[in-house]
Structure formats: structure tokens, C-alpha cells
Image (cartoon, rainbow, N blue to C red; front, side, top):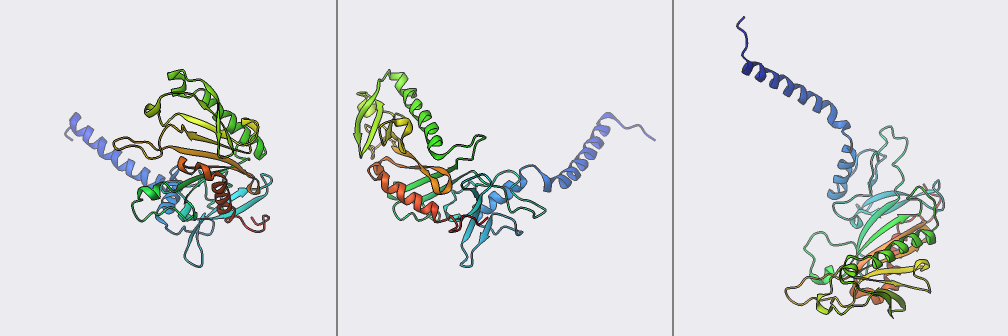
Length: 297
């Protein structure tokens, strides 16, 4: 037999390894880590019906796609099933988590502790997905994040969870990049819309950055407020002049005790004066997905 050259041996080695790699990938692909998450995330984005009887996306009799979310209420062990229309689930995101499917059909899916929604003010319809939003429509979008009080390792009530969030946001006001850059004093500013306010005093005028925020709160103490907001400094106009970009907004936090949760609603600052109504409408929308019998699992 004629001895093989080094080049011929290398070629044979590449062929052998290549074939082995194909076999390994073919065997490993179904059980790839995260594959199930990617498959179901794709189902959420495309609206495809999930397979099996233990997955999160189901089709109602009227054809509506619904995301089933197991949610703890009152205790970690008391889990109810929220039925969230898939039209409210943000595109490109999913509340699903790792290993969200039990292949032995023993459990429908694990309990979720945080999920996001999109909606439109003021009718709270889902965010339109079939067309480009106009400026007026973009100004009416509200984003919601619902977080369980059981999301962390420590169990807290809603007031305690809000207090932790408020302390962090208030500290952010005091250590804001622009506040430290311009050496701006942080003071109690004139209140607005039945809310007290803490923020930076400045004379930046048209140079005011959109990242400079005020902390709004109800009640006497910012860290124990039942309602508080982080909003772009009022010097930034809602409608910027031509050639300039600004997107002043608000993030509003409040408790939703019926779901043992806190809610963050994000929207344009132009709606700040309606913060109570936004809280009411967002709360009603979320609670409409809760079963009437909280014992239902």
C-alpha cells in the first residue's frame, strides 16, 4: 500500500470529523439547552398553536390565542392561572422560562413571577401590530411590567416591595449622571397633579437632557408612598422642535394586591396628569385575566 501524504491524511481526518459532527448534532439537537424556550418563543411571536396538552399557548373557542400564566396569589403555594390574550404579549418577548414544559405531562408549566404587556390608552386595546404606528398612536402606548412579591428569595408584602423600588429610584435621582455632571442640587420642587416632587434645580433650558428625571410621589414620605413615578424633567418638551429628538416619559409604580404583585406602567409624560386613571385602567385590564375563583389552578 502506498503511504498517504500528510495532506491526504488531513483531508481524510476532516471528512471523518465532519461526518461525526453531523451525527452528534443530529442526535443532540432535540435536547439542546434552551431549544424548548426558543421553540415556544417562536410560537408566541408567530401565533402558532402549541403542541401537546401541557403548554402555555392555547386557542379559545372564538379563535383567540391566550397565554396561560401560572401566578402565585396570597402564598407561593396558591397558584392561579391567568389567561392573557397573546395580543398583549410584547413582540419578540415571552414570559416563558427555562424548562417551561414537562415532557412527562405531570405539570402544565412552572410558575411565572414577572411578565410584560403592551396596550393602548385609553381603551386598553392591544398594541396594533399590523401597521406602522403614527406619532399620535405612539404617544398613546402604555407598557406594563407585573412583578410578583414572591419573585425573589425573600417574601415581602406589596408595600415592602414598593418601598425597595422607591428607595432605589430616589437614589437614582440623587446620583443621576447629569445631576453629578452639572453639580445640580436635588430639592423638593413644586408639586404637580396632587403629587409631591423631588428633582434637580437647573437653568439648562433647551439643553436639558431627556435623561434628567423628577421623582413624583403621593403622601408625606417618598419611600413609603403607595404611588410614585419617575418622569423626565419638565424642561424637556413633549413635542421637540424640528431636528431634535426627545421622548419624555414616566414610569409609574403601584401595588396590585389582588395578584400579590406590584406594577410598573410606562407611558409618555404628556399623560402625567391622568396618573390615577392610568392606574385604574391598567389594573382593571390585568385583573380581567384573573380567574373569578382564585382557588382555580
